[in-house]
Amino acid sequence: MMAGMTRVAVAVQPRAYDVVIESGILSQAGARLRELFPQRKHCFIVTVAIVRRHWGRDLRASLSANGWTAKFVLMPDGERYKTLATVEKLAEKLVKAGADRGALVVAFGGGVVGDVTGLLASIYMRGVDFVQIPTTLLAQVDASVGGKTGVNLKAGKNLVGTFYQPRVVLIDPTMLSTLPAREFQSGLYEALKCGVIGNPELFSRLETGRDKLFKRDPAMLEYIIAESVRLKAAVVAADERDVGLRRVLNFGHTIGHALESQTAYRHFLHGEAVAWGMVAASIIAAALKKTDRQTAQRISRATVNLGPLPKVDVNPRGLLRAMQSDKKTKNGAVHFVLPREIGKVEVVNDVPEAVVLEAIKQLRVLSR
Image 1 (spheres, rainbow, N blue to C red):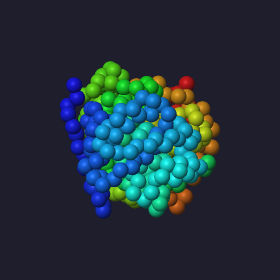
Image 2: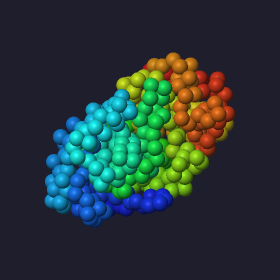
Image 3: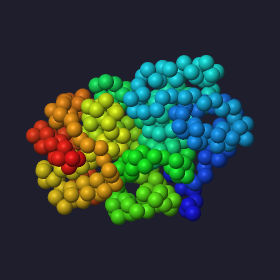
Image 4: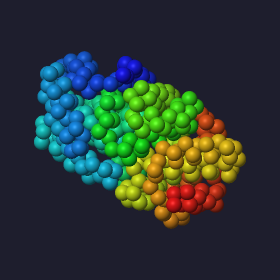
């Protein structure tokens, strides 16, 4: 059985919001949104076909029972549809469906749905309220919390976006029961990231609890979701706009984002690319003596053990060029988040090119 409800406050200005984690909360979504928006009637649910097929009926029933008129707005599934063109098409669909400035938009899906819907809500009619009901582990532990929205350009990932916080995030771990194994594992890497940057106990549980994880043990899932959300909420509250502390959340993302863009968002799931990015960052940290080799190997081993991971077969110099166009690059310097120990990282912007290239070459060898 699940341990009950966990509520995590995200203390951002001008309005804090809650992340509520509870088994079965999907059936209460209509009531919870009614409490938050007592006068509203219409909500528009942005989702993908497979999520609607598995869980759409439950969400609609909960909304209807609480006086909501719900309309589904479908978008195509996959990272390659995380584009401005998709945002434009969804906006046109909202207009046709009758969405006005008083509309409530619901992001009902994984990280791509959440990022696209958040951007859509932030600019549609110059901004409408939205809520997050994440349906993948990656979105539950990371993407749905913190208010980052965005879409990709050919030049790189998330290069167009806004900071726009949801009014509430409702997380139902039971929805993970229909998640394919590869998608589930993709989310585990983001949880492991949270462990490395600020929660040694979470890292240890992920490192040693593989059997329980792969069986999707309910208590284990609630623990890793809640701890990941707590860490992210604390970081976001301290640095909402990503100018300082929040950059630690990018551990694994510098090389991870470049791997995604270099393979046209078709080869890696986001969490898988981040996983290889974490391994590379650990190799770089050891090479620069930011951490000891045992710690670097421990992080790499724990990451790979949550696998299997897709092969890394990219041109190292092409990857380096992709990193230089990433939004985390400032004044031409590529920023890396490097581990010092489990639970502590630092942002470094003077990593020699040769060290980065060697780390990429090692990824190619490790992934054979």
